[in-house]
Amino acid sequence: MRILRSVQTKACVDGSLMKEYVLDEPLTEGFLEFLANFGTVRSLEQLKKPYFSFEKERFISIKGFTSDNTVEVRYKKEFQDIVADYFHLLLFYYRQGEPGIAQMKGIEESMHEKMNVRLGLSKEKCL
Image (cartoon, rainbow, N blue to C red; front, top):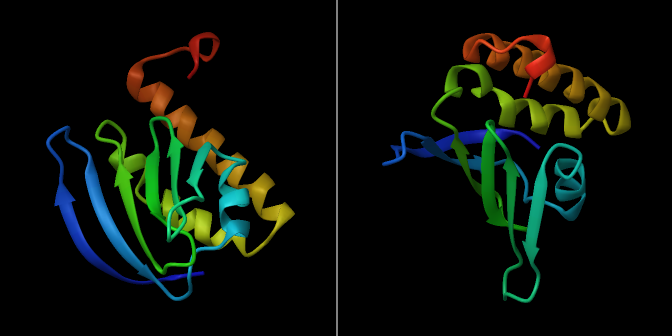
């Protein structure tokens, strides 16, 4: 799964940045299972088109419809520069299966360390 293009970008009232992407293939249940390794996935299967949302605190949120190739990604205000590539990385490491989960966890750890430095937190008080 890859991003073909960004359809629109909006600055939100809360300071977050929303981007809508068109992917080269529809989102799948497998991708949602992969996302569950990194945050909270919620699904509304009872709708005509099954809707999902993904939330990774301090990182991003993703919203869309399963089997659709358009997705909305919202980047949190405080760390937009640190997590700017997070969605791209999720798509890349999803293709790698189990090894991709471990690699993505390592990248997340590095991002958390950068966030902690910005917040002035010591290792004992990490996020």
